[in-house]
Length: 196
Image (tube, rainbow, N blue to C red; front, side):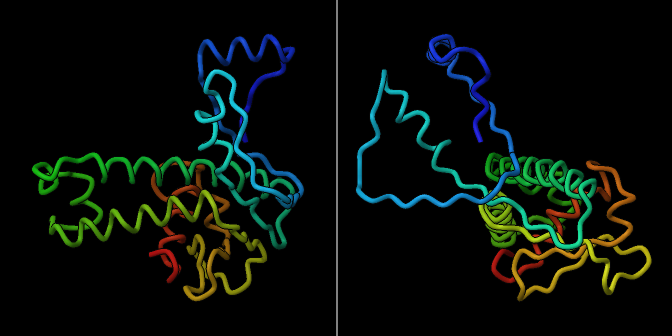
């Protein structure tokens, strides 16, 4: 969702033409479907349509919540946003690390072991899929705590894409950092067969 501000339309338009800065925000709302009844080229004003098109065509699915309280839903919205940030940072780091520096990349070596080009490319591809799944798939957060054991943050069934079962350790964790709610979401997304 784009946050354009609350000013009058003419004020907003002039400000957007000057700065061209956009801030995306994840919002939760009811599901709405639109049917395009004819193909049309987007109207443009000073080339704005072409610059906005990537932002306007990105379709983030609204998460589905099972047995979650309002407070848990709010915490999950925050954790999901941070999970997307974490995954995008990892994706960017993997993509932008020069090949000559990959063997000495501390974070890669810490998480994935010694550098081997084929493995590096697989990890990079997996993060591409994780980012895509977080940004565009309907994630189901199941808060029922069924089959949870002590110390378990969350679990998934690899053949049941995008449903994450959350346990008590998840709710006791911080939003970000080591062993966090956002990190747990990224981790669990990696277990789905259709992702990584």
